[in-house]
Amino acid sequence: MHHFEYKGKVLHAENVPVTEIAETIGTPFYLYSHATLKHHFEVFDRAFKKIPHITCFSVKSNSNIAILRLFGKLGGGADIVSGGELFRAIRAGVPPDKIVYSGVGKTREEISYALESGILLFNVESLEELDAIDECAGKLGKKARIALRVNPDVDPKTHPYISTGLEKNKFGLDVKISVEAYKKAQAMDNISVVGIDCHIGSQLTELSPFVDALSRLKALIDELKTYGILIKYLDLGGGLGITYNDEKPPHPIQYAEEIIKTVLDLGCTLILEPGRVIVGNAGILVTRVLYSKKTSKKKFLIVDAGMNDLVRPSLYGSYHHIQPVVEENRERETVDVVGPICESGDFLAQDRELPRCESGDYLAVMSAGAYGFVMASNYNSRLRPAEVMVKENEFYVIRERETYEDLIAKEKIPGFLED
Ligand code: LLP
View 1 (tube, rainbow, N blue to C red):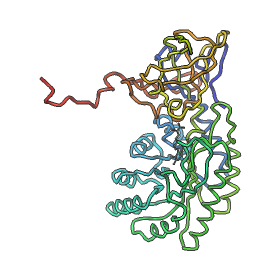
View 2 (spheres, helix red, strand yellow; view 1 turned 90 degrees about the horizontal axis):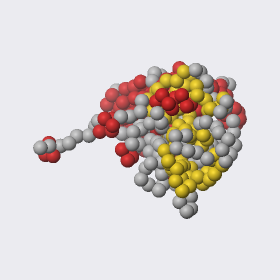
View 3 (spheres, rainbow, N blue to C red; view 1 turned 180 degrees about the vertical axis):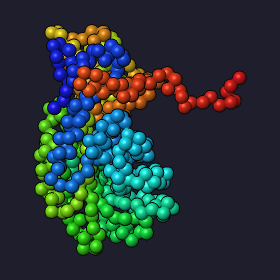
């Protein structure tokens, strides 16, 4: 369920006409619905209420501090992958003891920052990283709580760029060496082994890969027990898919039931790291048609948002539904919706059937709340777009559109070039 609906002819976010926001702040901008964000978080979190758990929202999917604050207030934690994400989560008020830290390339500076902040645990992705954490914790006179991220080698049946739990992927520790790794960790002075972790991929539309991964972790937990290594936290990562087009992913309640069945008797606290399923359909990208043009092969709609604003179509060939903000009864035509960037790969949709659009019309690119703004760049020296949150009858700018001054704020002309 989301709160982007037509009232009369005009698309609304909750009770606010999207046209009103576009006319006030200009385009392009990301637009989130507070009610949808809240609803998605609560449905997911409540689905696990039968067992001790922490819903650690995956900050990489949408890291705006207003959104992190909302989930923190709803009782959520955070799944982070960098010092920058830790900074955001703390600034947003997420309790550090609900923050888990994954990622294959944590630097010593980032590790120390996380230790000083008192995060719940590190999801460790290599033996060398384990040494680094032990060393940093020793220097700070602290014990680092860790889980090992195990690569269970299951096929998530998703896009190859976003599958992470296969042996050929760079993530986690090979399940075959994980018992040895646990023994090594257990013997370290500054490490406290508390958990086990996996994350097998993103945009999964079937339950079976999650269940397979979980049963591998379960077997490992049992084996570890025989060595006196007790696992308190079981982190299953994120990855539950959403509907962009015609996908039929399981509902969070089905997902939770299947997981709870498998982990109930383990007595662990479950950690979940959902991103896309919470924010994906809670956000849209609003853009304006600048021009249209026809070649002998195609008709192009040139809009004011490009691959620098939303890269998913260009990068993964992802489908995002596009609809006019004002519904007019116009004939339909097949078009490519393209941005202003100087690359042929700069498109939001190809060969898409849309009602005929004209210069000045607003379009809504749907399901853009996850991996949208966070992957935006300044390529072609374009200003990153604004972000807006609607709550009932009001809208709030939660990140201002960048300015030209922002573009060069960190740049310097060296003395030898000054006259
Ligand atoms: N936990 C870990 C360790 C992850 O690597 C990810 C996503 C998540 C949780 C959250 O996964 P989610 O629930 O959102 O599926 N940019 C790509 C997606 C990359 C996902 C990376 N990891 C896209 O636009 O589809």
